[in-house]
Length: 199
Image 1 (tube, rainbow, N blue to C red):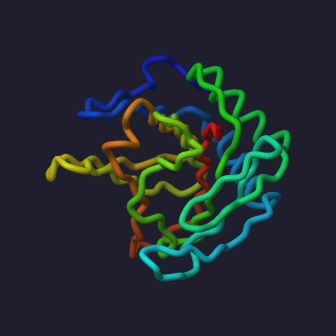
Image 2 (cartoon, rainbow, N blue to C red):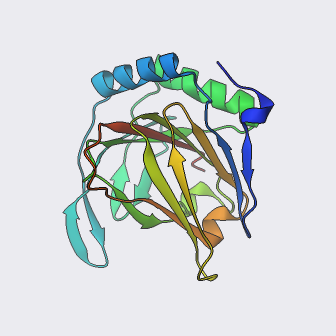
């Protein structure tokens, strides 16, 4: 793994602890991981309910993790598949680099620029008081947007690269929302893994 201390970028944002490792996995390894995940994961498309309206999620998802640790959001409850060798390898590398431990991973497949993930915080009760979210990306670059809940002009855009790791911790989920917006540009698929601890 190609990880050096100078690769870690800390964002100086109020009420947030966010670190970004743009080259956590070298490009060749990241490309191999993408192909294996794209081929081997049992992707599904769920219906979600937001503000009383139900619609198909604009992306495909899967949940892997420890047995007996389901994850619920937007009136969806996902049961985890058992860990596979590749996901355990990725989890181990992230845990060694960050000093954190994780019990599950939510995988998202963005098939093209029309697939997206709207404004939200990862603040579900089962994630604990101050959730630690480790987000690793493979495939196409996508813009990741952050906005503060109460400071109107406090925003941050970040281009998440192939093989990159974004770590959000502390009070970030209390004060900030994030999203992957749609784009009209013709782009390829992206796979994102968000590791978390479900209590």
